[in-house]
Amino acid sequence: MIADLTTDQREALLLTQLLGLSYADAAAVCGCPVGTIRSRVARARDALLADAEPDDLTG
Image 1 (cartoon, rainbow, N blue to C red):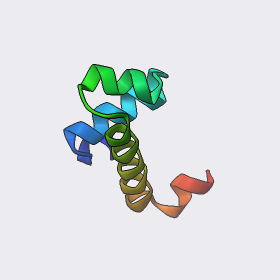
Image 2 (tube, helix red, strand yellow; image 1 turned 120 degrees about the vertical axis):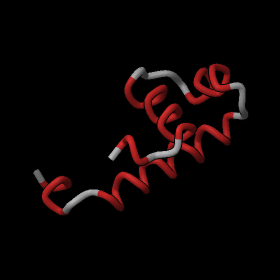
Image 3 (cartoon, rainbow, N blue to C red; image 1 turned 180 degrees about the vertical axis):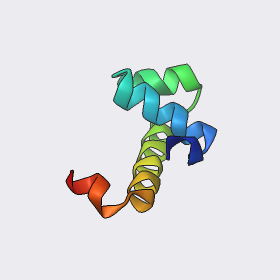
């Protein structure tokens, strides 16, 4: 599922959600505006939820 994300989406998601960087810090690492990181994370979450099976979401 994560492998299906774009490289930019995967990077933003991993930096903010797994490594715990703030959006501002992730933006500095990626060399892009904070709003771009927010958009990439939101799109990554949407893509992951769209690909998830119902059992994946309910346990």
